[in-house]
Length: 92
Image (tube, rainbow, N blue to C red; front, side):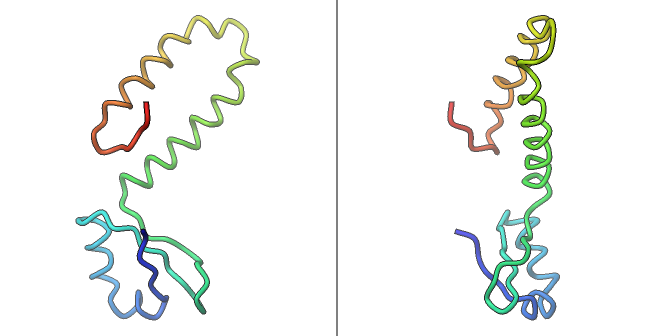
């Protein structure tokens, strides 16, 4: 479960929360008037999100791509190698 912290609390103890996110891999939901407005996450998690968005874009065009079968095995290899990453939680 993600910890929820107000904007005022984040401002007061910013370096403490940055350390928790960077070194303890905690995720923090930042709230304003008890409503979530942002999140603090570690850089690896952020990069996974960015890569996920790129992959989803590729998946949408795969079926429409002529001669896709030429690169299909390379894409499958990428999926298999990413599943071995111990830091990522992936169901196979």
